[in-house]
Amino acid sequence: MSYALPQPFVPTELDELRDGPLAQARGTFRVALLIPLCGSAGIWAPSCISSAQVAVEELNRASGINGRNVQLVMIDSALEAAIPIEQTVNDLIESRSIDAIVGMHISAVRQRLSKVVRQRIPYVYTPLYEGGETTAGIYAIGETPDEQLGPSMELIQKDYRPASWALIGNDYVWPRISHLFAKAKLKQMSSRLAYEKYLPFGLSSMSRFVEEIERSEAEAVLISLVGQDAVAFNRAFGAAGLHKKMVRLSCAIDENSLLASGSRNSKRMFVASSYFASLPSEANAAFKEQYYRLHGDQAPVLNALGQSTYEGLHFLAGLMRDHGSAWRSFSLGTGRPVIHRSSRKLGVGEHCGRAPIYLARADGLNFEVIKSLKSSYLNT
Image (cartoon, rainbow, N blue to C red; front, side, top):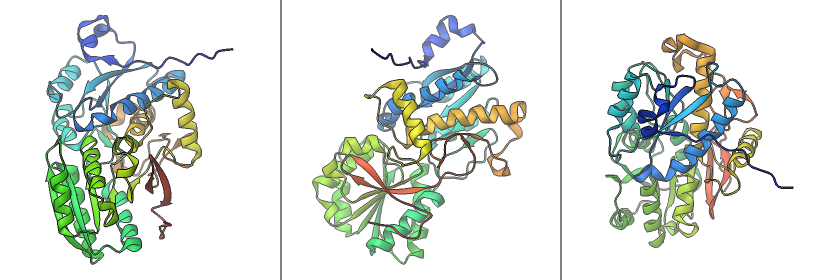
């Protein structure tokens, strides 16, 4: 007896919304799903779309959002996108074509959009970021450097005792603010800064910068490169055999990037995150069951950035349920939680509060979760 997989809710394309019969339909709760579909961060798009579809399926099996079925509207939020994201989002808000935004994109895009959205609709920002987002109506739910970077650097320093570190990242706000935090941490740990560099997106070759890091004689490298740029760096790093001399740490390398980097280029590489596909928790097991039930065994690889769109949609549903028309006066800093489903937490169901952060080590083409960063000892 054959078993037919359920059909996922397919996101609406922007042109279909503008020009088709859907333009006038108001029976659904429309969420603009802002994810990069091209450029360095485009590697995350398939898992972001697939994870968001799981949340839509779960929400629509219940009562949707505000009693209306959820409909995703797909918008390319890459810096390299042909149409400026501000223009697109403003037009959709002005025409009342969307009811909310869930965004998984870099912070530079969020900063641009904050000047456009202006609390007209709720805007849930899902990935890890540099922290400090207090704009009214924007809800940043991802990890910050004090949660991820500080504890992970301390654990790497304790176990490997690098005398100096190299810092490399893309040239925008998240790497720069994260590295300010990292440099302060290096002073606390009495470790030296040997190298620091910020790169434009989309460089085809990283060999020059790998050579510079080798000449710096750093013994640890913090990688704050995005998507395909991190892949290019890891490939050059592995080709140079620098894993024999240095240990790597990142807060943004995910399972997609690990797969594209290759196992031989990922030795002695650690990642700090609140989510890994291999996370042995009840909540993650439940999420993975729904994910593969909906998409099948050949679904895009699960990772933290993709999972964040799943959680972002459930956060949005909880925000509208718990705060309704008063969402504009709600702030994440008030201490009042938004109860929502998450695959990052330890249990199953509805949770609040910050998710724990874990350190994982690349093991072939998978991440092995080593330790909670709340623990004082790294078992390697």
